[in-house]
Image (cartoon, rainbow, N blue to C red; front, side, top):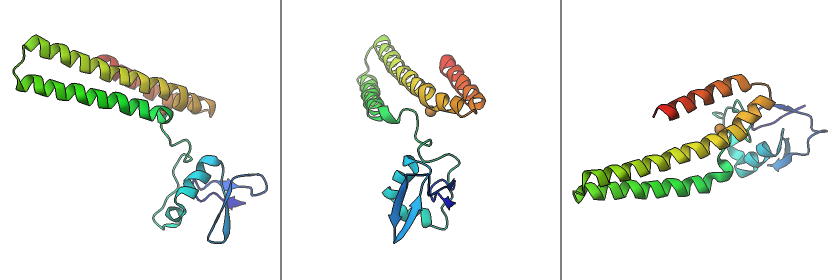
Length: 151
Ligand SMILES: [Cu+2]
């Protein structure tokens, strides 16, 4: 058995196809996520301060990872809306017009929350259920939905 230098798991070199050379030695990995993390910056995993994560490097990616650019685009649009609000107040615009814009920015943020929740359920929660530790994840997401509904 070899140790995956990224997550610390025991790996059978005869069974894994995930391996990489580093400084003349071959290292084996539990999966492509750990191998890619290793190849991106091998030195980090030999730092005496390095501790393997509880989850593998692949699982540690957030559920929205595949939609990151879309989420960022929406957040930047909201930043623009909030800057617009600042300007409205500076210009002493009519109260109700400012409130209407506040409501629009709030709705846009809520829609980001819904998108994040959807990705989280599809990836993080679904994966946790598959690996048998869904209970805590479902409890966590229920609490997050509660906070969203009450905000
Ligand atoms: Cu998630």
